[in-house]
Image (cartoon, rainbow, N blue to C red; front, side):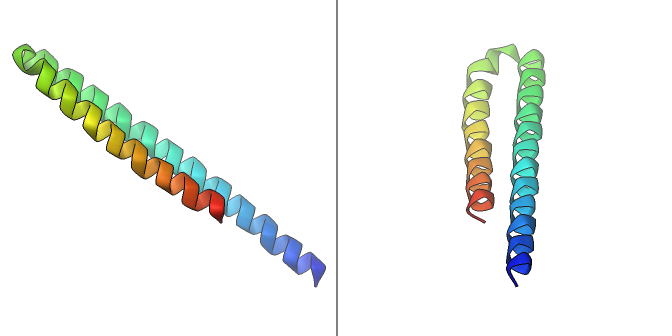
Amino acid sequence: MLSLVLLEAGISAIGAGIGAGLAAIGAGLGIGNIGGHAMEAIARQPEAASNIRINMIIIAALVEGAAFFALIVCLLQ
């Protein structure tokens, strides 16, 4: 019975680690796409750079918030 509980705890920890890793990878890819597309937009229209940069920072903060929430949920198991 004890081995079953330990197995369940181990599988739960592995699942939490995989979920946290996927959340971090997703956030990295999302912010990379945001930054890349923002730089492309600034290169096409330099006069709108300040508006594009502000929007990029806001969206990146939202992505980071969602990723942080996912990490917390994964680590709480």
